[in-house]
Image (cartoon, rainbow, N blue to C red; front, top):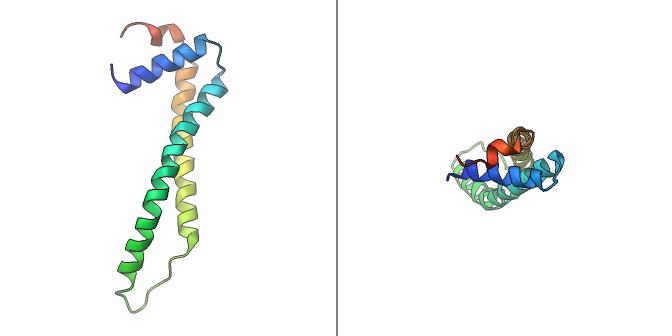
Length: 103
């Protein structure tokens, strides 16, 4: 069974046990949002160091401020929540019987 089928069955079970659509969407969005935050915490220092080193070679260079990192994490979180929210909502509003059947 692949990961998508497993998640669909998990959503079906949660729905049968009484979870609301909003709870399902919040749970999956937050779960994926944590992964995005961890990835950002790993990538931001590496990106800052790499860009600083690369920009030092130029005579007319800019300084890297925190705004570029704030904008990038904001955009990443918006895209992650929009994507997972849409997919979770679509799966949560589907009939749970269809997802719980053997596929």
